[in-house]
Length: 385
Ligand code: NAD
Ligand code: MG
Image (tube, rainbow, N blue to C red):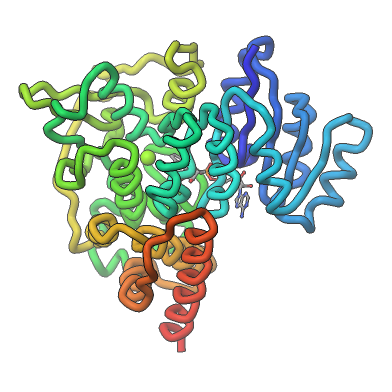
């Protein structure tokens, strides 16, 4: 029996993870489950999976959580410190599935324990960069990439040396607006942006897929996970989302990982690693899919990947600033307060206005994140005046 904690249990990745656990009840013991404010949803999961502890990040939701868990024997807890405490509880594997930089502190806490961390929460790695990779090296933790592209790359790299890698190519679906004109993009609504053609995901990452910030963040994520040098990292648009990424070697061999566009595949790969486990998905039917197509990204209509590459090249605090600005801009877009095409403009402006020294600790990263958010909000205010 293995023990598991799921940070962000009520989200899309959390649900996919728990769906796999539900199918193997005698193999797993659930330690901590966390959510932001959905006390009722979290309590339901905690009771179903007989978790040790359930934590809401938003302390205002703690009374509801306590009430829902009364008499269950499950510890109810709330707030940022409780989230970190839950993440440090012994578990064989922790799934980091909180959205945004909000997941950074608990993810770092799990890493510091030196155990296995399945990382879906890309914003945490983008913001913390070397601060996180250094913590992984120091603690001896095993970071298992859960993002489908990075999980694909991780699988394609198995048994090979970075010395032999010619390039790594991240595939991008291109999102729901792949063929939209600039005029159409200006008028894009939140409802249109969160309707992804291939994947069923949380709102924030769905908007990131539509702007291509998701792929840009993934480029920075790959840069930290697979240190082959930024110039060896490429992006290609592949609308069918069947090939999840590829590694090309010096002898001309390219290895790719293919699979259904369902996050249970990469999550299962992390949960079972270095073994394999069953998933309930139908086998890949390539004859039914028929065609796999590819095209170069269009950075005129979708400038996000260019901005992310620049931030990765600048290094230091730039990726944390970019990530924070994007989180604020996406929230403004989702609230109907910012046009879709202004998201990248806000990010570019914040990067130009705020260039702090490189963070060297978790506290530094969180301070940069907070200051960049404030800067982004002031840029947004200027934009709407
Ligand atoms: P989601 O919005 O569906 O779920 C987010 C989870 O985080 C929820 O449990 C929510 O309660 C919790 N949360 C939100 N704000 C929080 C806060 N301030 N403090 C603490 N907890 C908070 O998101 P998702 O789609 O599951 O994505 C989660 C992460 O995984 C993101 O970083 C995303 O980029 C990454 N990811 C998602 C997918 C996907 O298919 N959904 C694929 C690859 C990577
Ligand atoms: Mg991805």
